[in-house]
Image (cartoon, rainbow, N blue to C red; front, side):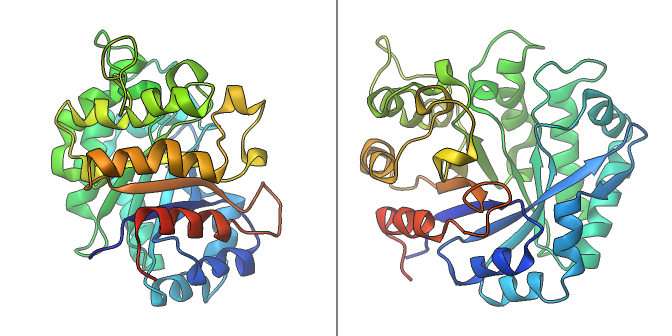
Length: 303
């Protein structure tokens, strides 16, 4: 039986720590972040450059069977930078392809969080970039993922942020391999208790008489294969801000009992879990291997 995905986002200059993910239950390691200026020129962040500068890190992770991607974007990425990338999608894809090839990576993650976007058509850009990456990246190194926030899959009027990823999923099709959905920091769309999250995140019980649109089950009902849907949660309470009721943090037992078990009971092909982030909080020298191990056990992964 193929193991389910456990995706971990690594944001640290401590390459020895990130290297410990090789011995963890994470299946995919996403190194953060590729950033851009307002001319559309891409470069590694301080953390990503440190990872690139370690001659053994990526080799160590890949030798342990981990898929290793780089992530473009993040919450601090400006609208002007996204607009510049959208203005020349081929150039954007070429720059990312060169980075992947040079560092012998397995692909690219797109972490678009430009909720108030203006000056470009976000669904068209994200769709076109996905297709360009799938075709331009070298064979075997063209794994493409996205990390949308939950509201982006809720659905709404064209041009609204709640519709963006509904349109991307329809337009990009097979060009996107996984959606690492951020079920945190959006309390109305996520819920404020484990019980509420069973409805709003897993979608295995109705909310106001219907399947919640941006839940895993809700997204799957629109035709997105559930084998592409990853449920993303904070790995620790210190990896998000505010109270758990606001930020979507759940303890490991609640994730297992309120989200993973109900989903697997209804949809055995559910793809897996994503954790933000590695380490336990930014700047920490402690990893989140225990979180990954709990997720692996709940998902039925074989070590």
